[in-house]
Image 1 (cartoon, rainbow over the protein chains, first blue to last red):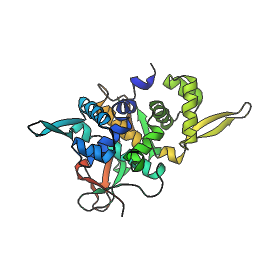
Image 2: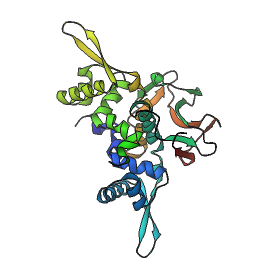
Image 3: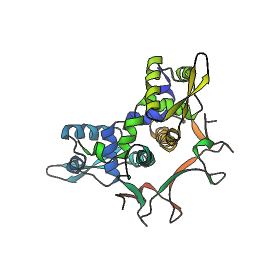
Image 4: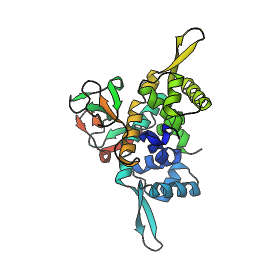
Length: 143
Length: 143
């Protein structure tokens, strides 16, 4: 076994959400999509594939089922805390794709609900109270 | 074709870097690893797999080759601007994995080179000058 499984949280994350359909389902979830038929219509995904990916995301604790109808029981899918915590990762992947992987204008931009302004994502040092660029980031093992 | 290829920068990004070995190679690149033998030793990756992934990352413009020896020619691999711009995505994936996908303490933490303090990643609205939580992020098509 290489370092792949031993010490890399990046690889560990991708084991959960590295599948493209899973990412697209999660993107929809962040946009407020909750119901099977709405994911289907939005993504153009086959129903059996969607059912499989939703099951996996529920098993992983990233989505949870909440009934919205009783007879017959129908569930919708909502992000858990674990799921909502993927927001920075999806945002960062999207921004890189906007810049480097899609042609022309970004298909979607992320804005502040209060004012509609496009959001920034940044890295900050809480001690120095400054924004930190990639060349000033170091990694180390925790003390 | 579903929305997968049409309007999703997230999926577009993963098409470049969604492969686990590629991510691990990039993680090493950010830590300063540059030479074939050093990637090999650090990752425990088969030489043919490493050569294939390095070729793909060079073809994608994420790494570039720089000769460090003349006879015979030997190249090292350095991040391009496009590659360095993956820093926020790798950081976000790593932080989610630290919290949700690995057991115990995070294997690695990211710190400010100037002071050694652990870094934060956050989303900010430049107009309101406030930090924005995931529930206050909306997506829209660009004007």
